[in-house]
Image (cartoon, rainbow, N blue to C red):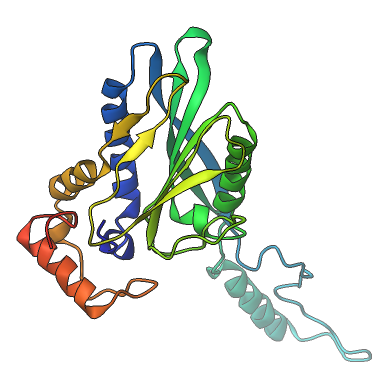
Amino acid sequence: MDPFIEACGRWEDFHAKLIGALEQSIAVLVPERYLVRIGERYYVILSVGSVEQGHEAAVDVGVRTRQGAREPADAARGAVEGAAQAVAEAPVTMRAFVERRFRETFLEIRQTEGNRLVTVIEVLSPTNKRPGSDGWKLYRRKRQACLEDDSLNLVELDLLLGGRRQPMEDPWPSSPYYVLLKRQGQGNLCKVWPAFALRPLPKVPIPLLPPEADVQLELQPLVDAIYERSKYAMELDYRSRCKPPLAPDETERLARHGTGGTGPGGPA
């Protein structure tokens, strides 16, 4: 997994393509009695700057006469009125409400009979790892619901360096990425596979309804194909800074893979 896809602002493009590739691959692997569907969730953020802060309205232009003073002469009055009109007609700078709509996609495997939801597959987005954000809150509620529902399977892929992981009772592995699997009927027990930038990504077991065996998904070839098809190596700037930072030798090896066209999952 090349972390510079994230660092150079190409994550949204990669995420959409990976969800599509996962849907196509899993759909041909599952038995006939299952359907694979792409689901969506939306949320809107309004960027309002200081508009939310209360403030009192003030008069733009005012003319006040001191007590006891005489009315201004006609010429002076005309000058004041002209200045007021000029100020009133001048353009002003205002901040608009900016609506940003976020769309996050995920996968669902359903049983054709009764349209029963069997497995949820999530590829995390940056907002899912930004505590306090709408994306964090929405995903946390959904994740909690999947973990509490003992009839559901949950597969969670985190291929992002940045952000904070969702809380667990036990410490996360120290690897930069991971694959998490929660099986139905096993309570809150989850299996977690560490994943790394310079090693092939692990196979992902996709559970169905018992007694059927898991579908084994080869994740690395999908990522490599997207990397090559999208020509990321031509535009990724390996001088950019990853957060958290990579070791110099890791950056050098990733850059070498990119310019060599083998993709990050190729041989080191």
